[in-house]
Length: 391
Image (tube, rainbow, N blue to C red):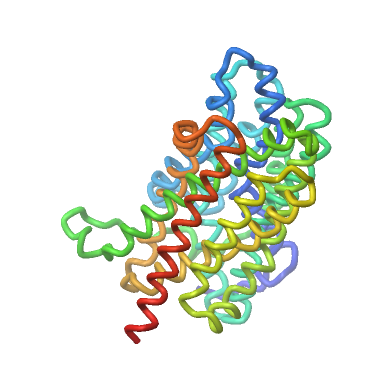
């Protein structure tokens, strides 16, 4: 690739990183769920909660079609069209009063995010491959931007939710200035404009994917089914228990995501000292956090529970991605990661439906998550001890 000094300028870097703000923002509207339940009394609570997670279904579709888009269009065109979809479909519920139309707009929001999700990550090594220090910095900032989008969105919704449930969807209008910044400042070198065909034939799929990846995928599916309960049950718990308002829920979710940023950044430091015990440790933090949140009758217990949860979950996915890298063949890491991400999105999507089968109440649902993470902690600890003794 020819040198391009433009990629080292601050506007270029900020515009490139800014597209990652929306990757985790699909569930940010959850504090408005109690208001929407009142606005749609004939719609079941489970279907209202589904509005929080249904974008992940669209993200799966976007993730699946992205290789085809990469072969037809330039990366810049894909990002611009995807951001336009995010901006339009994300804010469309501001003027909608029909549940089905809102549900459809949320699915298309997910398609927009999923269509450029992989590019938000893959463009960085393509652009900065000749500078390892700059590459590491940009990858680190990209991970931070994922959480930062959720934090900023949640803080904005602290105010927007006081206006109306319609107003919370205005948070996605930020996609438009990000689109304009990307169009103006990001000029991609020609070498990035043609994606390589990395398709895999079905006959060698079983040889290409390590069997452990299947187990990791199932585990990630379950983790996100039970973890996502926090997003759509916490606002209901806070309001019903008189611990605060919808704005309180948004503030706590922002706190949880913000804590995950430095914790994720400290993963390498912790992993070098705790090795395989990082996994059961972060699972134990999740179990303890869910237990405190589900049993809280005082606001500060709720805050402590969210802090512990943020600390625990900030380590889960870094460990999972490193695990994938360790067990996968070098040419299969990207494909294995895609499988795990799809299972993650499936877990997020079906979470309200599965949790509703366990318990309809907010406390009961969150307590079931505490039980799940407790069982997974025991499993992780036994596997870690076995690994130690074998060595």
